[in-house]
Every structure is written in C-alpha cells, then in structure tokens.
Length: 323
Ligand code: PBG
Image 1: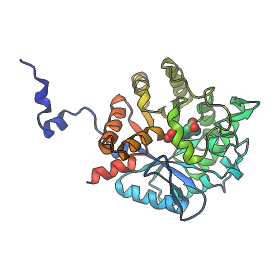
Image 2 (image 1 turned 180 degrees about the horizontal axis):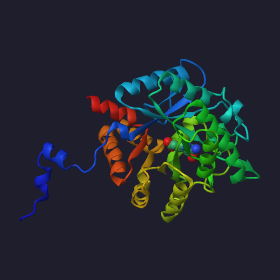
Image 3 (image 1 turned 90 degrees about the horizontal axis):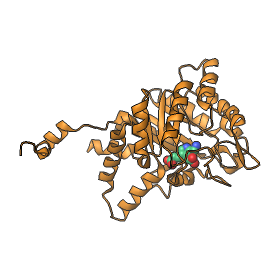
Image 4 (image 1 turned 45 degrees about the vertical axis):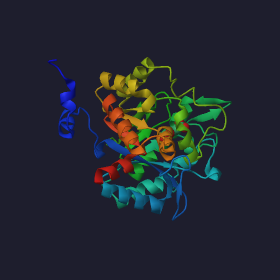
C-alpha cells in the first residue's frame, strides 16, 4: 500500500497539524435572555445551564463572559404579558426593558459587540413576528413596526441588528431607515434562511413567545426547500445585508454550505435552543458525552461553511478552552 491515510491520524500533534477546521471564540455569539426586575437569575427549565437574567445580573454575566474571551452577545427580552399588544408598541419604547438594557450594556462595556433582535414576537400579544389581522400576517404594515424597532435599537447603541422576522423586503427597508437617520454604520445580520422549525421550542419557553394561534409557516421557510434559500440570499445581498444567517444549524448544514458557496458575505448559523436542549438532555441521562457532542456540533457547523455561530454553548466552550 502506497497510500495509508491513517499516517496523518497517528498522533495528536499530526492530527492538529492536518485539521482543516478549527473553532475560536471570535467565531461565537452568545444569546442571552433578559427579564424585568433586579437580582433575578432563573434557569430555563428546558435549557439546563441557560438563565433568564434581570439587567443587573445580565451585566454581571456579560462581564464574566468577557473575561473568558466572549465579545459578542445577542440579548433577547422576555416581556411581561401586560406589556404585549397587537402592534408590539413596547418594542420601541425607549424606557422599555430591552432598549434600556442595550444602552446599559454599551455604557458599561463599550468594547462589547451587540447583535439585537428585530422581530415582533417577544412583544406581540399574538406571539407572531408580524402584525396579525383576521388570521393573516401583514407584511408591509409589519415593516413599519420593525423600522421603529431597528431605529430605537440603533439609538440605544447596538452594533448589529438581526431581523429574525422573515417579512419580505425588511433588509432593504431597515437599511434605508438606518441610513436616513444617520446610522449607516450599524450592521445588518439578516436571518436569511430561517426555517419553520420544531427546534425553537425551548426558546419560546424562555421568552413565553409561542404563537397564540396558528404557526409561522407563512413567513418562515419550509424545511423541504433548499433553492428557496438562494432566493432569500440574493434579496438580502441586494438589499444591503452584511451577514447572511441560516437557522437552525444542524438540520440545515446543506443550506449553510449552499449560501457559503454562492455568496461572498460571511455566513452565520444559529445553533438553536432545541439543538442545545437535545444534547443537554441526553448528557443528563448519561446517554452521550455532552462536552464532546458540543465540540463536534460546533465544529461541524463551522466545517459546513459558517464563519459565525450563535450558540448557547458559547460560554461552556470558552470554559473548556481554559481547562
Ligand atoms: C423569533 C425568534 C425565534 C428564535 C429567535 N428569534 C423563534 C421563533 O421563530 O419563534 C429562536 C432561537 C432559538 O430557538 O434558539 N423572532
């Protein structure tokens, strides 16, 4: 035998020399959940190790993560039911939970990079990402709300907005609002190919944001489709996105590769709540080695072509690097 591939696997040093993919902390974005009040830290029952923090505790958590080398965070707000309405008015209330926290984070840690979420669901009494009328999700009317939300987040000091709503035309609409209001420097990470997925369950528990009626299939993509992701990608590129995101990650590695092959913008992938929960649950039962599964999952998302990974494992990964 002239060719023996096992020679390149014979020692840890050689394996790391020939490794084609590696993970670093600068690849990761850590999603965080924010709740009202102070001195509160409540574990999400379907996401062991992940907490909902009041603002003071959130700041402390960010400080701890910065020490571990995580620099980019994606906060999401859990809004009290009493503040939800059909138009998500609380989403652009400058004194509201989310916008206050964005400003506080940027004030205390100017070096932090924030990716803030633009979608109506946390604030909507219907639990949808858009305005609901007679059971329909209204696209163009929703853009107006998203515009107010994005502008308010820019004013609060965000670095990147992340439209996660899947309305048509929103990237261009938001780019225009930001630019005409003096925020041409705020980036857009578009949730380009966001699928109508069963893997969002634990997130909806964390935010109490599940749809009150119906599902999200008229705006989120059908898991059957691949080519449609190219249509979404093309629009986002034309409309001025800076990053294209695929969500979820694991059942959609082909989509990550497809977008990475077709577009020159950096590709992000969201390793979502249900993907985290599955590994944690199996680990807790002693059925898999959770740490190794985490490392394999993150590496596979990177290998598929994602430069950036949003993951609830970000902090745990950072801790494994220290030990
Ligand atoms: C909705 C939104 C969702 C997530 C982020 N933004 C879920 C949904 O469509 O209900 C899910 C993230 C996760 O599961 O980790 N704007």
